[in-house]
Image (cartoon, rainbow, N blue to C red; front, side, top):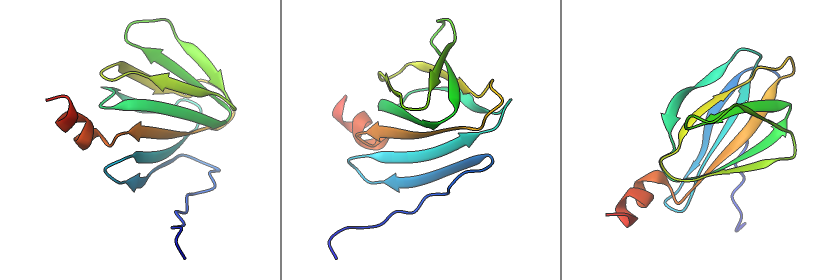
Length: 110
């Protein structure tokens, strides 16, 4: 078999899991219940946030809050301050794709 199967949790409550950490890409899976948030941090690579359930609230740098729904892909440039939370009643679930992996990105910008 050439393919590799990478399972992830079918979320019904809060989940934070790292799925892939190859040089080419890092993929994380997060589900947030109402009131949950990811710690505020700066993007450390090119980041793509794929919302697959509910609505997620994003504040980038010092901009106003944006609420992105299931079916959206949000592209975030390198070194953007990210404040990610769920301010809605429904579980919010998304995947984080970082390409290349942050350690390779740092090597490429030296």
